[in-house]
Image (cartoon, rainbow, N blue to C red; front, side, top):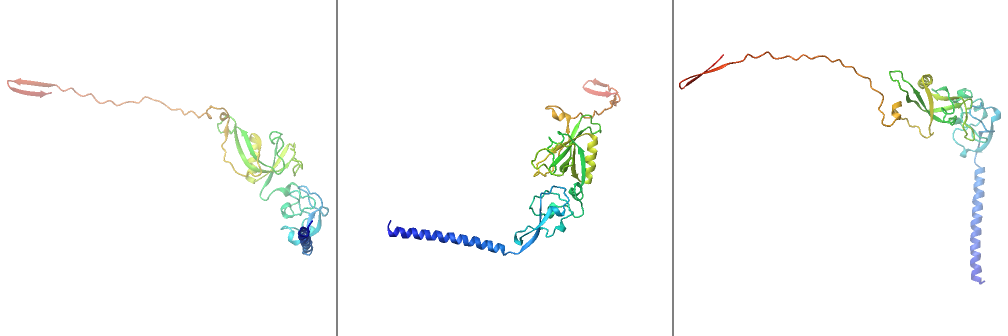
Length: 278
């Protein structure tokens, strides 16, 4: 190999070595800078915490993180979270954030999961009503009612009573299955407003309840009309209309009085013609 080629290879190797050394230096420098950042105490979960759990001292621990890398709202002491209920599952080592805890002094279990101004109402279901048991905590459903209105309508009617209702519990379970499998339970508990709680209770006693599972991203409200039995059959007429009875009678037609006939007499005398009427 000629000297010129050896010289070029040497320059290339020297350049690559310099780039590698610079990269290593910058990596080490960034680690040193990160270690020099001021740290802050933060509360994390010491084990997996299920929904509805009342946090105790054994459920959390204090670790130190660089202050610049912490999310907003983290707790700095265990005393601020102990005694509060978890409304969302918290994994081991995860930050304990206010959005995952019930408000202070609201306890644990189902009461801590009820949003402010809402009520928890339970309805009895089976595997059909509960959409093949896929209605589990955290899902949203519509509530349908099938019954007879009782206002003169004789055939069954199906109507949507409530829309986009949050399911709080399936049976006594407050969290969904880790594997996402359906839950076979006899009762579903939902979070509704006080007004909707009355509607749901009345609907449960007036006919058959059916739950319709929604996509969690679909929060739209639909203005649906009630469906009658006759609308299920193609070409069938709608519900029969009430028959209106009308009374018929003879109508007297006024007749004009008879007109007396007029007689005309023509008299010809020579060249003269005269006419007389009587």
